[in-house]
Length: 93
Image (cartoon, rainbow, N blue to C red):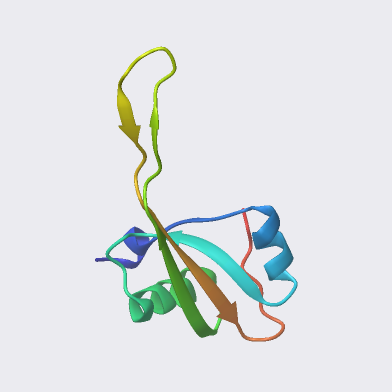
């Protein structure tokens, strides 16, 4: 898995914005990515020093389509909380 495939996007949410004040960032990653791969990909893509990586995998939500009996399931998502060295930033563009 290449570094471009590991990182899908930087998540810009209320919680993510709050964490950025503490040098922590929220990134959506590939489901098969492991912590060392994530750290390496973030360091190469954004030019920062990664101190810590924590991951969370959420299951896909289930629900019914309004007016039908069809069950739909959304895809699971893996997020990584990245802690970087003091004074360094990940640009959220």
